[in-house]
Image (tube, rainbow, N blue to C red; front, side):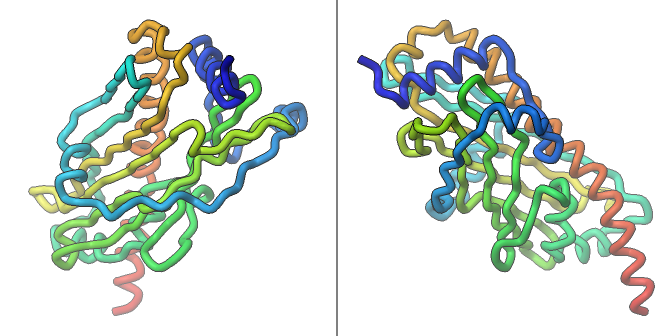
Amino acid sequence: MMSGSSIIFLAAIAQLLIACDVDAFTNQSSSRRALLKTTALNARPRQRKPWSERERQTILSRNGEHFKFDRMRGDIEFGSSSRIQTILDGADENAVKRWLSDDKQIAMSIWDPKLIKEVEPKVYRLKCMTLMFVTIQLAPHVDVRMYEEGQGSMFKLESVAFDPNIQILPGIGVSADQLGILIDVVGELYPSRDGKGVDGKIGFVTKGELPPPMRLLPEQALKSSLSTINRTITNFAIDNFQRGARSKFQEFLLSERTAQ
């Protein structure tokens, strides 16, 4: 007999294979919220062990989407790594380095300002878009440490904690531990070779454990459905950064001129 968590996860994935309905966090339908009458499992965000450079490069060295599935064990892993290139008006290498030395400026450029907040010095909580299913909703957030090295020569980010923020129908208990959900985010930015913008990469990996019935699903069906999530998150992050970086860099230049 399947456990309650397996049944919920089965229903979620089955619905995902049919359709993935993704909304921006701030545009959730009030009627959906009223009908769902969800109960959030607001446990303390799970902490991640410190990153090694090898772990960072494993994700950043990939190009495009990543998928790994062990049918016997039920382990599944998916994500995406993408290059970021943005031209900044009025930029030169020194100005870009000074800008990359300000973690708050970069943090507010990377993500939608309404979906990010500083939770401790140099650590920012990024709220992701909401994934809606029949009886389950995920609205994850990831705590990301952001810091610079070499006086602006390199800006790094890496996840330090996460919460899948599972919301379900009342009376059904599911936790991140039961579903085996793990979320990793890593990235780096540096001045472009010509000094007129920034280059870099950003990548994420989500891991989980499929219950036995789900391990029988065709691998291609799983890849196709998870690819939708990969593209949605990647496009959201890159689009927000390109818009935010141009705007925040202009604010940064103006503040420097005003301070002179």
